[in-house]
Image 1 (cartoon, chains in turn yellow, green):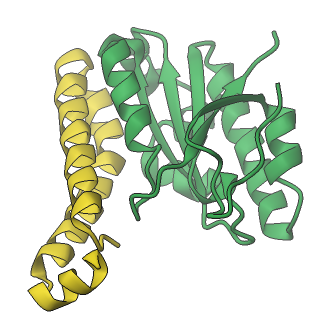
Image 2 (cartoon, rainbow over the protein chains, first blue to last red; image 1 turned 180 degrees about the vertical axis):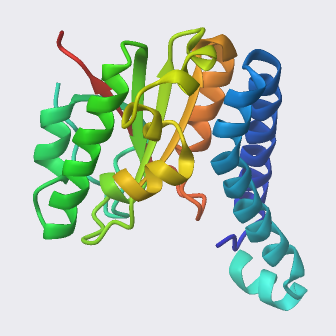
Length: 68
Length: 149
């Protein structure tokens, strides 16, 4: 659950790192290994991006309440 | 070297904390039946990973190393020797299951992430930094398993 702008920015940074990790792995590992090890990372990326979308979908009033 | 106390938020203090597997089991694998089961799964998973002869480093994070009484599963990152990506498909069972996500979930109740050293130190550090934040973006510690052999 992301409630604040700071958490949102941290989540974005984490997602960027995970995507970069995948790009490096795809370049440095065999295709078979990449297909095996990328699955759980992609699934986690999807979950984390969903957290971000939920945060972005909230109304300004709700976000302001969490930001205090 | 001993693990620090958990913070009030239920997590280890931020950072990478090194501990032997017996220390980890002693701290996190005995308090409840669920934790005892996961501890057995962790021992089995790491035993198979080490049996490949290519395991370089292993890290844990998530609910197992928190104060959760009923951790959902294990979260593990296995760093393997460069070249392991060309060999893992030929591993015998059950070693291979460690590196196949669905099988790892079934056999070891683990989200077992892995890569080889070919990714480089910078990416390893970046990966570890991602998991030093919970999904709620709370800074937390992770554990590196130490081996004494």
